[in-house]
Length: 418
Image: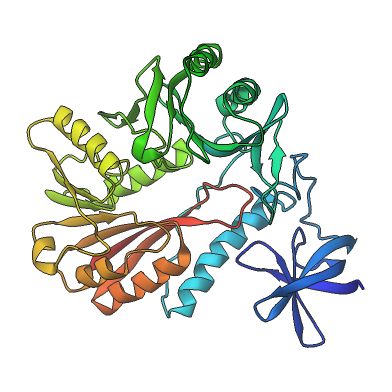
């Protein structure tokens, strides 16, 4: 039985939230102030998830979604929201999360707002079905695949790959077998890792088909397998990423910042906020995207051995001992206050879990500046509270929107001691 609801706000997952008779309802694809008819579907925590049936009174901020897959594809949930209101909501998410930890931020730096057609990394799902193949993303709350014609957030080169990818998948994958396609657009072309969901050995015929596909689709490198065992099937051009005056060859399936513009903005913030630091450390460094090219001495710490190897090769090309790379699990073995005393500035870009143990170490150190890039406001707020309690000030914060029309929001911030 459907209910009539008035949406009060948008929650952290991107769903509209309404209250009725003491119950909380979560309704996707709605906006604040709208009156909607919704069909209750099940429980979520202490609330009720409901499917949108009809918008009875639309918000003035509602817009026509640009993608025909909207509401079915699980990739975007907020395409119907006008960009200024959507952007303000993402900043409010950060403010609200910080307030829950008692963290008062400075006035935010201007947000970097995502735009259509700039995502340079996609993780596609592939499946052979008869003589054809599906290539796209999972449906919302389902393992079914949306066969995508064009993804409006992805770079043109990634969209151009889809047709040829379906053709080769129909050749090399057995019936009903699925695979992931991790595609990175590097500065020298597309780097594609095909990762079947079960072990498959490539026949000579299948290898020839993949080589022909790479030629046809202008793929720079095509690899097969998971990241730990990725086998380059064809390398037409060496994938390269350019960080200032440094060039890095990423491993297959490497983590990249989702958009080049966001990467450049974060690099600019790191350069400005660590200016004059003779010795800097980059923690959770990945392949060094935020720090390589630092004018002083740079030490990079990362646990992933493939990222470490790529960063080490780039550091050797930099020469003169300007950059050194160390493999280290900073969750289990964070840098101590004594080790941190060697550095004038620290950059850290941890995964969504944040850097609880490492933040505790920094809080007891004498490092004067800390630049923290975060992909999760919740873990950032927790770690920020630790740094503030250790005597740091939160001086700058800039929201970063790399995942357009999603509830995901990132940020980069500067802490200073004293």
